[in-house]
Length: 231
Image (cartoon, rainbow, N blue to C red; front, side, top):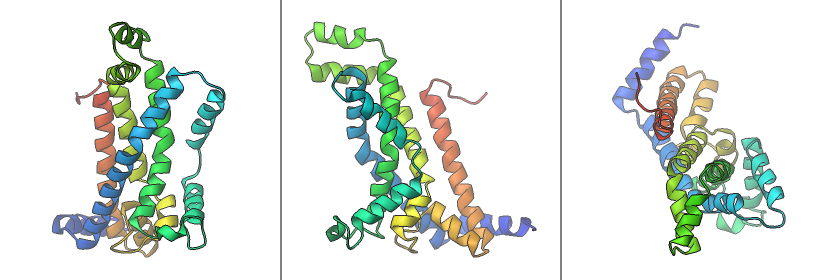
């Protein structure tokens, strides 16, 4: 297969600002950002709780969250589909095949990533940070915020990883979004569709955007980890 012509055409589409490409790119970005913004606070709170508090069933909760990391995203999509379908318990919300359903799926996918990264960051912090804050008169809430601030780079890495995971997700998005042009078609689902139709120029163009996003996410992550700067 000669990829030179499709690649040239892909660059043309990007430079010309093809409306279909821009729609898919915009949908991918705003749904991913909204999902991460909504799920980050409860995920960090749960991660902190699991790292700092002892309670019955704590280990089981940690194991369950870690197990969610390996769940196939298409299975997550199937579960959400069953919940929000017309006959499902949440069917009255009419979320199926809407951006809202995609956001819900992204939140479920990002949740274990954020929790596990937060647990690792908090457990790796010096326990004297919290104790010192409490001794200086801080409340439990203030002590917790102080600890989270000290591990803010680890929390940032969690957010960056979560965003990178959901922005490239395809299985769940197709299952509950329906890949509807102009409504729920994002970068990964558009790549899958256009490639299956033989339109490699569209697929290559969107692939370039996704690769640029992946590179950008990893650069940000490296900077947060103190490795930033290309040499």
